[in-house]
Image 1 (cartoon, one colour):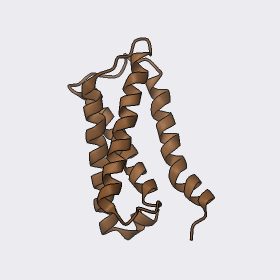
Image 2: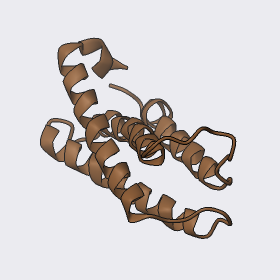
Image 3: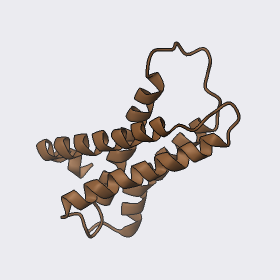
Length: 131
Protein backbone atom coordinates (compact mmCIF):
# COMPACT_ATOMS: atom_id res chain seq x y z
CA UNK A 1 0.00 0.00 0.00
CA UNK A 2 1.33 3.41 -0.95
CA UNK A 3 1.56 6.01 1.76
CA UNK A 4 -0.38 9.25 1.49
CA UNK A 5 2.91 11.20 1.32
CA UNK A 6 4.07 9.05 -1.59
CA UNK A 7 0.79 9.49 -3.46
CA UNK A 8 0.76 13.26 -2.96
CA UNK A 9 4.41 13.81 -3.81
CA UNK A 10 4.69 11.32 -6.66
CA UNK A 11 1.29 11.68 -8.32
CA UNK A 12 -0.26 15.03 -7.35
CA UNK A 13 2.86 17.20 -7.05
CA UNK A 14 3.60 16.90 -10.81
CA UNK A 15 0.03 18.08 -11.52
CA UNK A 16 0.45 21.13 -9.28
CA UNK A 17 3.93 21.94 -10.61
CA UNK A 18 2.76 21.68 -14.21
CA UNK A 19 -0.23 23.92 -13.46
CA UNK A 20 2.22 26.39 -11.92
CA UNK A 21 4.34 26.25 -15.06
CA UNK A 22 1.29 27.06 -17.20
CA UNK A 23 0.37 29.92 -14.84
CA UNK A 24 3.88 31.42 -14.99
CA UNK A 25 4.00 31.14 -18.77
CA UNK A 26 0.59 32.81 -19.01
CA UNK A 27 1.80 35.75 -16.94
CA UNK A 28 4.34 36.79 -19.56
CA UNK A 29 3.71 38.61 -22.84
CA UNK A 30 3.74 36.54 -26.00
CA UNK A 31 7.24 36.70 -27.52
CA UNK A 32 7.26 38.56 -30.82
CA UNK A 33 10.33 36.76 -32.15
CA UNK A 34 8.55 33.42 -32.50
CA UNK A 35 7.62 32.70 -36.14
CA UNK A 36 3.89 32.79 -36.80
CA UNK A 37 1.95 30.02 -38.49
CA UNK A 38 -1.78 29.44 -38.67
CA UNK A 39 -3.39 28.19 -35.46
CA UNK A 40 -0.01 27.99 -33.67
CA UNK A 41 -1.57 29.24 -30.45
CA UNK A 42 -4.32 26.63 -30.55
CA UNK A 43 -1.85 23.84 -31.22
CA UNK A 44 0.30 24.96 -28.27
CA UNK A 45 -2.78 25.00 -26.02
CA UNK A 46 -3.76 21.53 -27.21
CA UNK A 47 -0.26 20.16 -26.57
CA UNK A 48 0.13 21.76 -23.14
CA UNK A 49 -3.28 20.70 -21.91
CA UNK A 50 -2.92 17.16 -23.24
CA UNK A 51 -0.03 16.77 -20.81
CA UNK A 52 -2.14 18.22 -18.00
CA UNK A 53 -5.02 15.85 -18.82
CA UNK A 54 -2.69 12.85 -18.73
CA UNK A 55 -1.20 14.02 -15.42
CA UNK A 56 -4.68 14.40 -13.92
CA UNK A 57 -5.66 10.88 -15.01
CA UNK A 58 -2.39 9.48 -13.67
CA UNK A 59 -3.04 11.11 -10.29
CA UNK A 60 -6.73 10.19 -10.17
CA UNK A 61 -5.78 6.57 -10.80
CA UNK A 62 -4.51 6.58 -7.20
CA UNK A 63 -7.89 7.45 -5.70
CA UNK A 64 -10.56 5.13 -4.34
CA UNK A 65 -12.47 5.44 -7.64
CA UNK A 66 -9.59 4.14 -9.78
CA UNK A 67 -11.65 1.14 -10.93
CA UNK A 68 -14.26 3.42 -12.50
CA UNK A 69 -12.21 4.18 -15.61
CA UNK A 70 -14.86 6.19 -17.44
CA UNK A 71 -15.48 8.41 -14.44
CA UNK A 72 -11.75 9.01 -13.97
CA UNK A 73 -11.40 9.99 -17.61
CA UNK A 74 -14.35 12.40 -17.51
CA UNK A 75 -13.16 13.99 -14.26
CA UNK A 76 -9.65 14.40 -15.72
CA UNK A 77 -11.03 16.21 -18.77
CA UNK A 78 -13.31 18.37 -16.61
CA UNK A 79 -10.46 19.38 -14.28
CA UNK A 80 -8.26 20.15 -17.28
CA UNK A 81 -11.01 22.26 -18.83
CA UNK A 82 -11.64 24.12 -15.57
CA UNK A 83 -7.97 24.94 -15.30
CA UNK A 84 -8.06 26.13 -18.92
CA UNK A 85 -10.93 28.48 -18.07
CA UNK A 86 -9.04 29.81 -15.04
CA UNK A 87 -5.94 30.29 -17.20
CA UNK A 88 -7.91 32.34 -19.73
CA UNK A 89 -9.36 34.43 -16.90
CA UNK A 90 -5.80 34.97 -15.66
CA UNK A 91 -4.61 35.98 -19.15
CA UNK A 92 -7.47 38.44 -19.43
CA UNK A 93 -5.86 40.41 -16.59
CA UNK A 94 -2.31 40.28 -17.97
CA UNK A 95 -1.25 43.27 -20.10
CA UNK A 96 -0.65 42.35 -23.76
CA UNK A 97 -2.52 39.03 -23.31
CA UNK A 98 -6.12 38.23 -24.11
CA UNK A 99 -8.67 35.59 -23.28
CA UNK A 100 -10.30 33.60 -26.04
CA UNK A 101 -13.06 31.02 -26.01
CA UNK A 102 -11.20 29.18 -28.79
CA UNK A 103 -8.28 28.71 -26.40
CA UNK A 104 -10.59 27.05 -23.87
CA UNK A 105 -11.88 24.77 -26.62
CA UNK A 106 -8.26 23.88 -27.49
CA UNK A 107 -7.55 23.27 -23.78
CA UNK A 108 -10.48 20.87 -23.46
CA UNK A 109 -9.55 19.15 -26.73
CA UNK A 110 -6.02 18.79 -25.39
CA UNK A 111 -7.36 17.30 -22.18
CA UNK A 112 -9.39 14.78 -24.18
CA UNK A 113 -6.36 13.86 -26.30
CA UNK A 114 -4.06 13.51 -23.30
CA UNK A 115 -6.53 11.40 -21.33
CA UNK A 116 -7.23 9.20 -24.35
CA UNK A 117 -3.51 8.77 -25.10
CA UNK A 118 -2.66 7.97 -21.48
CA UNK A 119 -5.50 5.45 -21.25
CA UNK A 120 -4.56 3.76 -24.52
CA UNK A 121 -0.83 3.64 -23.82
CA UNK A 122 -1.23 2.49 -20.22
CA UNK A 123 -3.53 -0.29 -21.44
CA UNK A 124 -0.92 -1.52 -23.91
CA UNK A 125 2.15 -0.90 -21.78
CA UNK A 126 1.57 -1.76 -18.13
CA UNK A 127 4.82 0.04 -17.17
CA UNK A 128 3.14 3.36 -17.98
CA UNK A 129 0.38 2.70 -15.45
CA UNK A 130 3.02 1.95 -12.81
CA UNK A 131 4.85 5.26 -13.37
